[in-house]
Image (tube, helix red, strand yellow):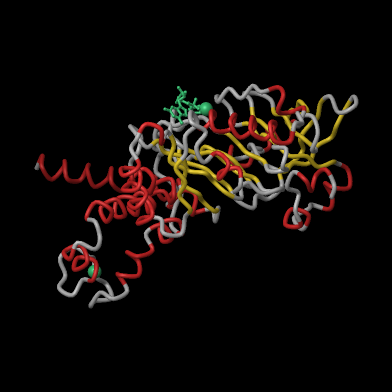
Length: 354
Ligand SMILES: Nc1nc2c(ncn2[C@@H]2O[C@H](COP(=O)(O)OP(=O)(O)OP(=O)(O)O)[C@@H](O)[C@H]2O)c(=O)[nH]1
Ligand SMILES: [Mg+2]
Ligand SMILES: [Zn+2]
């Protein structure tokens, strides 16, 4: 296996190669993103990198610029001490969220992730609705998800089991593992889910214990293999940027800064997958165009009435669906909508003045 293959350069990416670019450039993976620079790796040391002028000034959307986990075309200089990036490979998966504000703009979280670890702490941070939001974001990109409940040292077992049941209810397909960074509980089970050549991402609010978990994983790995890799020994994972870390066992993990709030997301497929039982129910409503608000024969309302579907979960679904519909409109669509809204307001005002 080549060095690139060992850091995730699979056949999928080889098939996406741009023949013209590959003829004149090398290939590397983005390990971290900084304000005006990047680091990239070919499997060994991280290499300082900058964007070519064309890429920097010729790119229309910030979403087309490299993010952590991206595969890029690059030239290397002075014994691989620095590099220039010329282009970004198509992404197999992409984690992104809508930025605050009216304009349709996305903040990229990471690219080419195979599995996302969604982390919530069992004590103060636990929130099913927030978990649903993360699941939707992850499902939208066909990334597998695993749910980790942190700080289990702070909660009695019975309560943990109650919470796990609730989580399993909204995410029947996902594996759910409770763990403690302090007591090192289930850290080995988590390490057991990390596979060679795969890329993982730690997601969750600030303070849930993502970085502590990563350090525990690295620490355990070092202990068990008694080998220290160059990247790991630097051991500085200040979580202000997204950093790709390569483990001894060949898995890669990206730690991310905690997200304050998870903005509305561009979703649809993700919604359908996360709320699949609601979608299924809607197919047995009596009327095809059922709005699930007051119709007789509405399967969703009946299920809520029976207590088999939580009203809150349904409301969260409706809210996210609305957000998603708005987000899926293009910028121009939104502007014209806002304009016609403006016109309407004006004409209403005129009518009033008459
Ligand atoms: N009780 C308890 N506290 C923990 C555990 N894991 C982490 N903490 C504490 O939680 C705090 C936050 O941990 P971090 O690992 O920095 O959290 P993070 O998710 O990386 O946060 P950001 O980088 O801000 O996104 C620290 O004070 C940790 O000591 C745990 O298993 N149990
Ligand atoms: Mg952190
Ligand atoms: Zn209905």
